[in-house]
Length: 639
Image 1: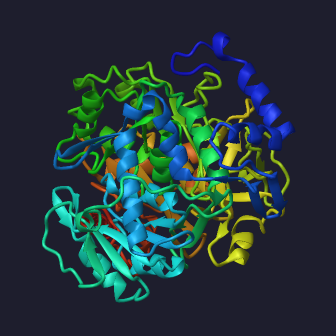
Image 2: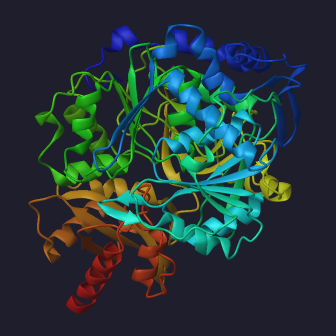
């Protein structure tokens, strides 16, 4: 049971966690009402929960304001002058905001939105790089009761237009450009293109980030500094009902229209702030850094609303993990005395691949806690993170959650109890989260058996709906297993109740009747000493229906060869089974990824299947596609 130096006798059984968890499921309404009272409400709710499956409304009749929760209430005591945000740009620019100065800037931005006619219930689209103005405008929208939709700045103009049109946004906030690996990303020009397809937008606010020349449309576009020239330093927070939408965030997929996930205010804030504190156990002097982009749910809940509701000090960094130098992250941790680092397995594996200069060349002694998010973590990356970054002394909180859940659902909870760690395993469900693993028929599977991950009862952070499409919400999440929220992931629960998430059930490889999660194949590949990262995809097979293709990135010091590809194929066969023997193994220098670090498996499938690749505008590095094609052609030539 014991892992990574934790003493089994001291930490197991987990009595405090078990008692709280049992109490939370026995009377969930009382449990979540107690958590909600930790916030500051303008009006107390009439009912804790209205549950009309599959739709839930939390703290019905209660009134509050998210901006007030995250800012104003902290100004009543010593947190007024506490640092809220340390910001560092890719080019080395730095800004520091106390809670008082952040409050002032949010109020001025809210007043600016008011000047443009934005009011309660109106939608505002935010298409910004990771600059302070992004959280500022998120909180400014919340302050006046407007609904924000943050669109990741790596999305194309067409994708931006789709999201603007779906929300009916009347104002867009953007920047002249963003920075990515030293190059300007022309955000304003992309907005101009998008607005040819989204004519209902009335005004565009432009933040100066790079100083690039941009086209400004008279009567529509306004520079931020001109809008805020004499804006008031206080805009009264608007009281909104608990289930008033706070934001809409779109999930992306390989096919079909993205789903507009709508989150409310009271339930979402209650949940996201509670689970954030359980996971990271921050103290007043803690400095917390989540490396995600605010364009994703991780940025909403784990950079803005969760931490700021708790009065935390947050680090925000604009650039790529390994630019302009491989040790940029370690410099930032050392500079700001970061105590808690929350990042993705993709980033960890990228650093593993790079090797030197490693984290051990910097003073990372301030670190007390490590976190992981975004995808299942493989044991090799877990150990590297624990040993190299945490120096073998920092607990790792490996969280599982989704855009739809609003906050962490499974993981470690040091603020409740120091739980034993199991590398590559997400952990235990958080209090109030009733998790089960089901087979195809909807029956619970025994410990150790793979099945579909479901949530058995509502929780405050759950989405209110899919925007403008309640039937899609019902079909996507509740139809397959009636009365259960279907997360779309494969998972397995061990005899201790720990949950290992195996990957998306819609990234399934069905080979000769065997259904395999892509993560199972990828973990087997990454277990090879030469492999830094791998992606497994399904390819057509005339006999089996589908075969398996693996794209593997090698660690420095290893050369691609037919012999190494055969070794890797044999390793997968040995670890997963003969039926999982790859049809092809491609050894590459890079995998195509979005700027948020997600592997674009549809691109890999297209290359391996000889199909059109489609839109690749959201890729971090488009040359990675050429690299994959080169490996594909080389393997064909060898055959």
